[in-house]
Image (cartoon, rainbow, N blue to C red; front, side, top):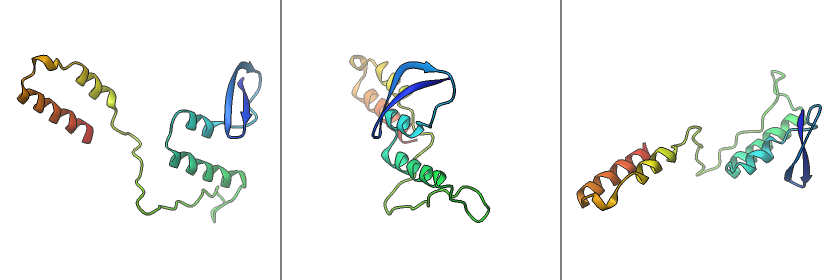
Length: 117
């Protein structure tokens, strides 16, 4: 089974209809964009997909992925980035009315340490 999709250029709309059989193509890159992945990741995925669709092979006969050009000043994205939820919930649980300035500064330093860890 698959969800019926309407395409408009690079945009997709998931229709509220499920049909029997496989999807006619993958919508992973469009879903990644909808999920808010960084544009660099989406661009790289498009490069790799283009090479796979062209069936370009390397010397070993395996699919040749797009060259990994590292642009000057680019940064490798963390696969496991800091999750803000525990930090935000910790911040939400602080009763600022009952904290002394010294305690507030201590809490602020703790939160900053968690963010940069």
